[in-house]
Length: 330
View 1 (tube, rainbow, N blue to C red):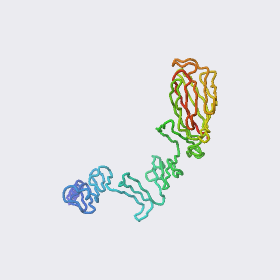
View 2 (view 1 turned 120 degrees about the vertical axis):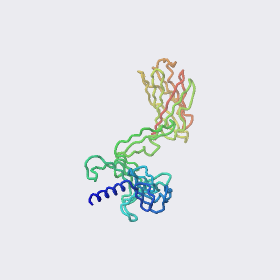
View 3 (view 1 turned 60 degrees about the horizontal axis):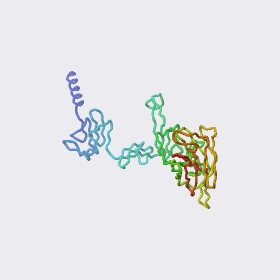
View 4 (view 1 turned 30 degrees about the vertical axis):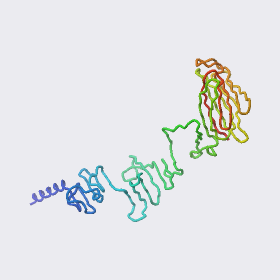
């Protein structure tokens, strides 16, 4: 009798081991198949609508919610998936995933009113799996996001170093404002913004004896200008100028300050200030170069025909390129 019972038990186990179990359906599509609405057909694969209320477990352990053919460990088909701390309405710590909008979203509500991302290490800790969790990012309901910090106080609060792998370059004539950091590490611009410290630049190539706009569209204000020219023999001429740029009562003017020619013992240029809008810049000590330029090749004249524009005249014997950088100081 005992031998017969053992044989019967092994037979039942064997049958269960290979059978498909269906709940509310005589047509199970997996090792375990629950038809929540009891609307599946007796034969064949249920339709998409019929699968929407089904739960399926495949022989390899994949679980499907809303699908009878899960292809991953947990395969859910639906528009919203949520996790609650309690079943009641308005419970704390609710999180749900919404895939109906054009941009899928992760939504969080509750007393904390935020979302935190934690990463565990293999170190022994106080958590159930023996891991210590480190907060890598936090998002608060006020829109602040922190990296490496749980209480971000700014829209983006980074507790650590930051790297930007590519920065878009702007046209040289666009005005850009330098960025600084205050005592708390918060990035700021010079105050008032887009006034003090703003820079703009441009480059032109001018034939011998010709005149061309060096820079145009200068915003009204007071500037420090740097003009750079060089030849094919490594001689670089750098000169500083003050620029007043106001259209009211024709209050625009330019004046040379100082400069540097290297390599040269002479170093600085001479400035002939013929009027408030013209500065003739002459360099001495530059020898003839293989690019054809003689000792006059780096000489030029800067003029302001109107507020907002600085022209350059090439006083040398060969074509020359000029670069100007303007920094606003008032």
